[in-house]
Length: 432
Image 1 (cartoon, rainbow, N blue to C red):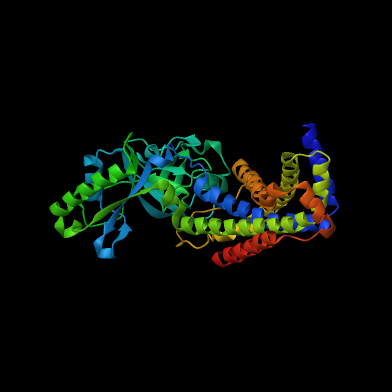
Image 2 (cartoon, rainbow, N blue to C red):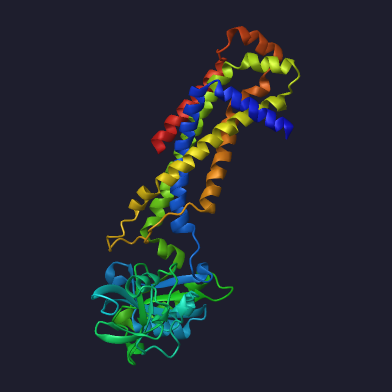
């Protein structure tokens, strides 16, 4: 620890004697680390965050592939859903839903809200628990009951805990509130009220009208590929039995995590890769600066070697200086990422209803994001800190003392290496 503290103090003094170099290096690294931290915070919020469902990776949406609509995925008919539910053996639960618009007149002025009709088992398949009250009972397929979102409960009913059991009017029909979902539950996106899905008695024979969105939970030990294979066989049988409505119709199982990410998943991953190039360019820049600076420090290194400093000690000292620069850049970059959160929300224009992207109202800088920033800082320190040391293993005391009178000059191999770094920066810039 005493030696480490000596290295840190010496590194700070050395950087303090070259404030221009230190400032440029820190700013360069801050831009690279800050951009990566900012985009990772979005990726963490949209793609990696935990969902308020039990074993979310076991949940899949099941879509029909309708040949009459150019092979696009689509909801399915009640007849197809009934066949899936009764005959498939690869799911431990399956439920259906439809969307709806409701006009709520209780708790204030009339307001149109986005609603969803869930079959009674839907919440159980999700594994979602209410914040207050309960969700639907198995026998409530035809009951006039409703579950509120946390946002609607707070906005129109003042977060009244006594709302459970009270009546509300939806499109002039009285419903009884039986539950309130927690604020983290927003499925599907933008929905504020859930009511039971009431299928008519003739639904099992309806293969024409496609309006049901189907969610299922994979049975224990069943993979997505196995479930897809079994459902394909079921689709082929339904096509033979109902050629007028199901000929050529396929099935697509899509993990719910991917479904919730919508169309933003691929652009976000591309953007994360792009800002990774920015960090590589920043590292190459700082490495070039350190190489140029190391040429002027050869006399100093030679004297320290002559006084007994071993090569490992010199390498550790230089890595300490690189780490100090990286820590400064990482701290500044994290601040930049925090300040840029509000601008990143513009990636999610949630006022446009036909965009298939998730609702994102805040981008938290949580422990995962800070951990990513620290990891990026340490990796960066090692990356650009080791580059100037590639030639250090070939340093000899006599050789460096002989070059001491020509401080600031570099060998032809060092010139070639620095030129190679510049070429790499240009290549990364073009790729970016």
